[in-house]
Length: 118
Length: 132
Image 1 (cartoon, rainbow over the protein chains, first blue to last red):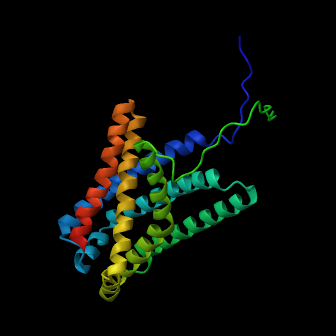
Image 2: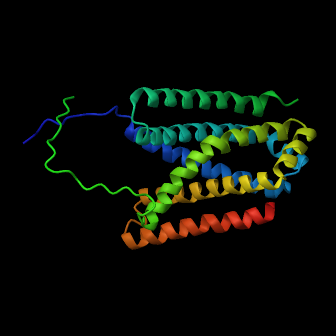
Image 3: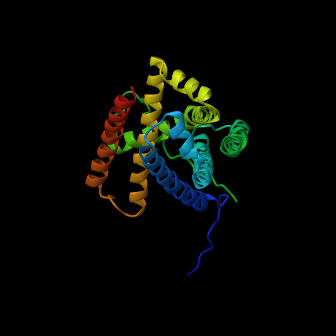
């Protein structure tokens, strides 16, 4: 016998669960790449550091990493807020603040990677 | 849709004395995953962006970052953030393995939780000692 299923929720659960994992893999891969490049270029001094980020492909990879971090942070922080902040208005306000902060960080990241450097 | 509150038959016992509850080790790793994630968002991310910008813009900026990060208190904070990153990463990989149905048995879940906890701390000490 088929019974009607009561569908509740906003239906973003699976998508965000999956996004959290895909972005996590991107973050792990970039971390390994950065470590390998630092070893390759020989450390953290200015010429080596600059040389690492001078490669256009690495700047693209860094941008990809930052976007992954922002999305990952959004899902995680939203989960924390949903767990602990019960008043809907306060939670909405905090979530909006988090989104604004992360979008702002996205702009900052672009400026760092492509903007401020001569 | 309709939310039908079920009548409470009898009050459930509630024990939430966080200092008295002795959590099993997977729960400890789990809450530390959350705490380290919050730390990374609140402190790690803005600090990393600031440091990245300053350190790339000029040799002087790079010297400013290395100078600021060589203060003893700053080093302690950096090592704290290093732990947060490593613990979050390792506990996260453990989550990914669990999603692949690896280590789901109680014994292996406890074992991998202990390994995650110890590995995060050991790597933090090893890398922290080199940076110090």
